[in-house]
Length: 404
Image 1 (cartoon, rainbow, N blue to C red):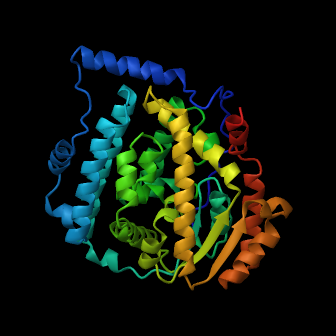
Image 2: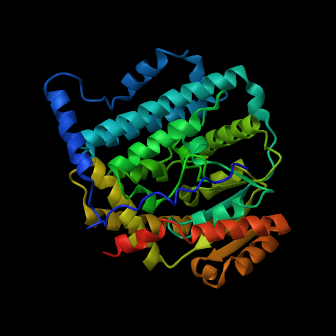
């Protein structure tokens, strides 16, 4: 397992005066970009999917789009990109920085799509990598999924995905992904000083596989940043099988690259809650840990997170709309998880957010027992270290910020 590198020692940001607050650096960047575009030094970044394909295919073969994928999965990505770009252009009301960030993210996803396809054309054996049954942490955002995920990941019998691999899924030698991730996190913190209180992380720290779903254009990464209701509706109403088939291909590739496919991978992404049947279909032997928390506490934290991201990329971020959208999303995810778990017969444990008030040991002992996994001495040591570390985490500042 890649051991966490703590980000908690990073200097805490100034107080966040209100939910739609943003750094002065955002306004500086917006001004610089507007000047560049107005004076003709550079064109505004394109949000046209066809232009993105042309740019990416200049360095790739068209066959790279198909590598390792079915025609259905290829078509799914194409349609998702078309609809997401349209929503970003027509609904998100992006400012210059938001448009630049949206272009950068989506162009990068297209490049990664072709890079992965090329790799799978050259190494089809990667897609046959046998995997140990994973452990899936499933729950609403802000319901304790990160805490449970990182406690389980502290067990040396398991393996988890570091931030750098999640957001850079194409493996290479030498592996410079930790450096590029460090650079992106530093830039992100310069733009958004509250980034590390909302979701503390570091390049090599255990993190969720959100980057793998974003690479297949799963909605949650993008709807947390932009006002794109048409894409949310499209994604929620669409079969998610293609997303999780791509996710499984990336997981097999990552496990083969690191040589840890024989160890159970502990994985969590809040988006799992929206399409749990597709996730279970991709990993039918999985064990599941479900986290639960009072929705009255989940909602404000989610609103704070969405508002923080949207205020940076749009000058028209609407807090009342964000509150309504968060309430809708919580209800949707709750209903979908309950429906999916009614048909699940595999090992499962449920963890309430408040259960950790009495310490980690009774909670995690029960989780291991219900999953049918022995809680070893080595696991206890690792979990104790992680629990102590998390008690000092910058994330605890977040609740004080959104309570303002």
